[in-house]
Length: 270
Image 1 (cartoon, rainbow, N blue to C red):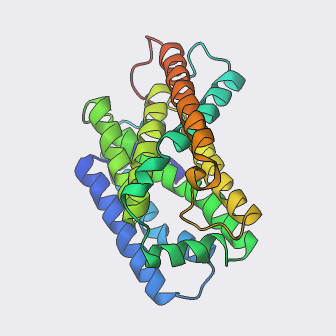
Image 2 (image 1 turned 30 degrees about the vertical axis):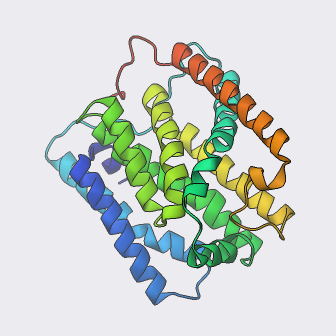
Image 3 (image 1 turned 120 degrees about the vertical axis):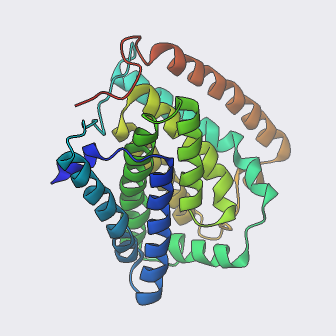
C-alpha cells in the first residue's frame, strides 16, 4: 500500500490541491477538537492529504505509470558525515541571515497566543511529538517527497523549488512565519533536488524545530517573537550576522560543487 505514494507525481495544480485539502482539514479538526492535544489534532489534520496522495498514487499505478522513488539519496563526492555537518551549519547560518525578515511583519496577538500555547503552555511531550516529530515527517513528505518530486518532472528545477517553497510557506497558515518558511523551504527544496534525500530535509526540519523548542523551554520568559537581535548587543549581533553570511556562502558553494554527480540530474526512477 505504501508503494502507491511513489506513483503520484503531482503537478503544480495537484500540489495546490494538496495544500487546500490540508488547510480545510486543519480548520475542520480545530473546530471539532478545540481542546485536544496538539499532537492529536496535528496527526488528524494530516490524514486527508495523505489519503488523497495515496488514492491518486493508486490510480496512477493502475494506469501503468512509472513510479519514482521518494527517497534515493546520493551525496556526490561528500562523505555522509561531512555532508550532514555542512547542511546543519548552512541551516544555522540561514536562520541568522533571514531573521531580519520577520521584522517586516509584526507578530499579531492571535499568532503570539498560538505560539505560546504550543511552545510554552503545552505539555512537553505534546510539543515534542507535534513540533519535533510529526511536523518534520509530515510536512517534508508532502512538500518535498510528494509536491517537489512531482513538479520536478513537470517544470524546470528552479520553478519547482520556488513553487514548493511557496506552498510550504502557505502551509504554515500565518503571515509572520511565511517569509522565513519560504526562504528555508528554498534551501530544503534545493537540497532535495541536489541529493534526492528526503531524510536530510526531515532531519534539518526536525533540528530547526527542536532548537526553537529547546530555546523556548530554556528561556520561558523570552517573548515568542524574540530573535537573536533581541538577545545580543548590537555590535555583537552584526558581527554574528556578517559571519553567518560568509559561512552560508561557503557552505552553499561546497554543497553545489560536491553534490549532484553528472550522471544524476533528476530524481531516480524506481
